[in-house]
Image (cartoon, rainbow, N blue to C red; front, side, top):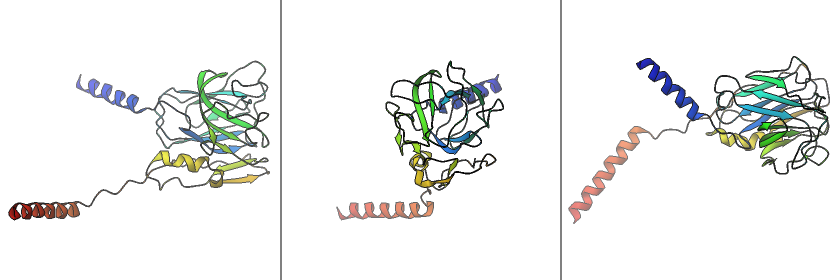
Length: 248
């Protein structure tokens, strides 16, 4: 009985710590138009069996057009810890996969082109009631300019440098190559990852076999105050207060 109570408490703590996802809580860290894949980092704990969608159909500010692709990602039966990098590969084939959870095609009439392009293509990550009914845009990446014919950021809550990454045209392969370990808060990495200046863009080439860096993002602990120094400071304060009393 006691063991069951402890297990129930641990499960409740994990569920409590899982974060309701907002815009910018995940970010793209790699884009591969040759392999047709990408990777993401999460800056918050993702609850088990969270559902996300990807599409490279263009967003016009109120809805998606058709002709390209939709994918569904279920995060799996365990919480995904903040800082984890997830790789999505071969998204244009029936062998598509995610390093965590399950990636599958979301069937939408008129959208059957599952490849992503090195030019003028935008991939959105979002949550919603269905693949075509987004409620929260979480991240975006583009080999265009987030224009009307490439996919807008209007009404997504994202902007270039804040949840949305704008690569150059002709980006067959690009990857975030900035800091992953020296900041004191995972949220502080958001601006770094969204800044294309911290990416390495290999441009046009043959990169289908390139595997992105999936090293987790970590934080550096803030140094604790030195215990001895605190004791000395406390003694000094007591002495000062004693002298003030004597002076009275």
